[in-house]
Length: 150
Image 1 (tube, rainbow, N blue to C red):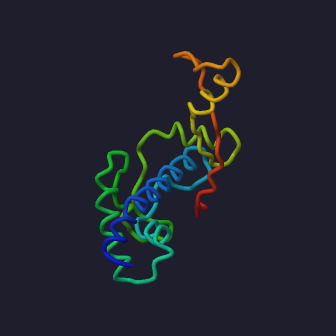
Image 2: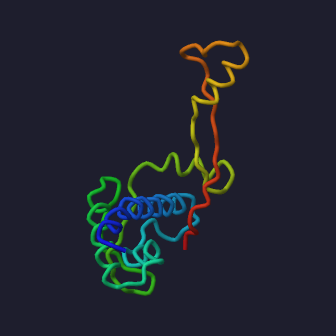
């Protein structure tokens, strides 16, 4: 991989890291996780599990870390881990509403999308004209497997 492809991977890796942090906070909020935060080293190893080059891992993580630590929904601090080691950790302090709602609905993580195209198509077929402004939207749900939380 080249520098350009590594740079293109950073937004996806940041999104994965933020997703893990929000999910960990939601699990803690429901009493299913022992802490609300994740050690940065553990998160790095999880997010970059498919990258085996130490040099490339370090370069990618440096970029990801810079973006995540600037996010207002993430608190960076140092905590004592269960084994007694002190480590730098990230904790999601943002809103958990959407994460909790998706889990509460069926005990699993799912994505929710709204589509105007289906409403447009159904309305056009039923009465032969375009739907009126303010007509009801159709909710679409899509399964999102995600990665397991450890």
